[in-house]
Image 1 (cartoon, rainbow, N blue to C red):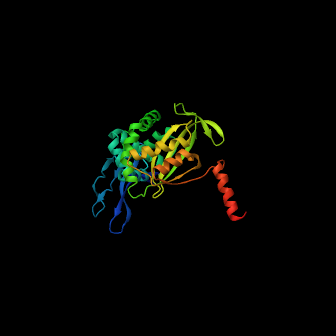
Image 2 (cartoon, rainbow, N blue to C red):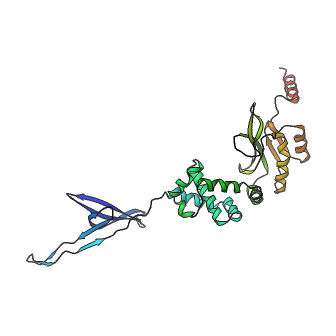
Image 3 (tube, rainbow, N blue to C red):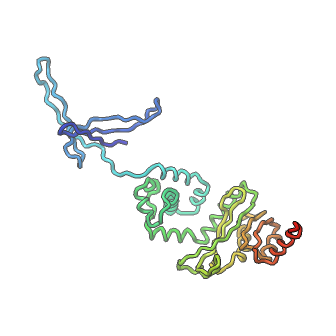
Length: 305
């Protein structure tokens, strides 16, 4: 890539075209400089090249100077390159990227890749995504991406459709559990918010009642890969979501051999469910349970405390 360098000598300013290139023998970058002439109009990029008069042995002029108007290379735009190109390579070569290539139309796939690059590189609010896109190489790597705030909202709504999620997990789970012994960590999180959606309902959360959505996630205990997620209405307790989660994992040909659960999932029904499906489990026993007090008392008696 070339650019213009200016050098001022006395009252005159001279222009040079600088071209960077890679020296294969010495294994480092070098620059080639080409003289363009005296600067006549810097804004328009117009220079005048003045060649010296040629003279004979007696000093007589034998040729007049030639003046050439030169219009050098002008840069059209400057974009960030390295990080955007790297994320494109990572997304294209990753198994998850290949799954979405099968599930999404080409135009929407480009939007998804642009948004993934934005979140990986910048991580700011989505309404700023278009400003980033216009100044990044992603604009050329994923041309035609819909990056306006409204377009992103519409795209994320479509991305969250139940059908697309099921199609994704059907393809993703066999890859994610390929080298796993299928030990799972299951966790439920309350997400308080004021979003206007039917599943945003009042529910118990850390000692208070809030409008919330319940988010269930499943992670492999063997390779730490996220395996599955689902969301529920905020009024539904964690206890009642375990059954459906295990059923849905089975529907995607993933059977847990062991699970690690938080205290929110403890109930007699869930314990029976795990035993019935021959799933080993570790679960934190809530301190308010009668069984908790009995275990503490038995341990005290055994230890002579």
